[in-house]
Image 1 (cartoon, rainbow, N blue to C red):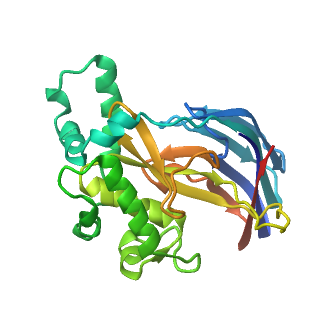
Image 2 (tube, rainbow, N blue to C red):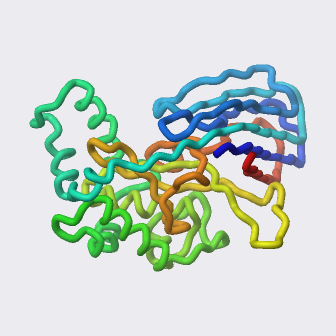
Image 3 (tube, rainbow, N blue to C red):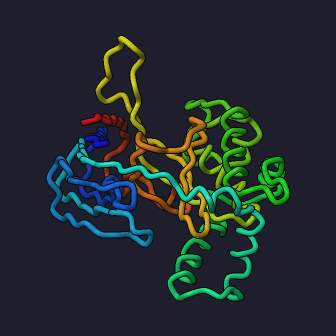
Length: 299
C-alpha cells in the first residue's frame, strides 16, 4: 500500500517575528513494515539554515532557522510512503505471559543472552521507566488491573486493555490540551488519541511492561457515496508494546484496532514530548494563530 501525505502548518502573527528556530519530526521513519520513498519540506519564508538529523530514538529530525522578519510561517511536509504489513509470529504471541515479560526486564543481567539480545532488551527497558508526560501511579495500576490476570498472555492483556479504553473513554477534542495530566483524563474518562495512548502506556508501565508512544497518520475512508475531503485528515497517535523474540507490536486504543495498512508512522519515543511534530522558539510575533491540515491520500 502506498500513500502520499501532505502536512501543512500555518502560523500567523500579529507582529513581525525577527528570528525563529524550529525542529520538525514530520518525515516518516523506515522500519520493517514501512519505507519512506520520498520526503521534503516547503517552508515560507525560506530558511537561512536547514539541516536534517537523526534524534536519540532514531527519528528523522529537521532543524531550520528563519532570520528575516515575517508575520506568517508556512511549513509543508510532503512524503510518499509504502507499507508492507506482515503477520507477527503467532506462536510466541499466544504463549508468553505478561509476568514472564515483566520478570525478564527485571532480571536482564541474570539471563543467558547474546550481546545483540542484551542490547535489544536494554533499549526496550527505557520504555518501562516514567517519562515527562507519563508517570506511573496507583490509580493507573488500579484501572489496568482487570486486564492483568495471572499468567495471561501479554498480547491478550494489551488487547483487552485497548478494548477497555475504547469503551470506557469518550473521544472529546474540547476536553484536553497537550498539558492536561493523565489523572484528569482518568477521572473524567475523556480525551483524544494522545491521551488514550499515554493512558495505555502508563497502565502497562505500572506493571513493568515496556510501552512506547507513536505519532503518525491514519487514512480516513469517506462514507459510501461521499467525496473524500482533502486536508480533513489529522495527525494521530497510538502505542506499541515490546514482546520478546517478536518485537514491537502496535495498538490503537482510539479506534480499537491493530494498526495494519492504514497507519503511517512518523516517530516514536517515550511520550508526546519526544516526538512533537513541530516546535520551536520565535523572537517577537505578539499573538499568533495556528492552523494545521493533513491529507493522507492512497496512491
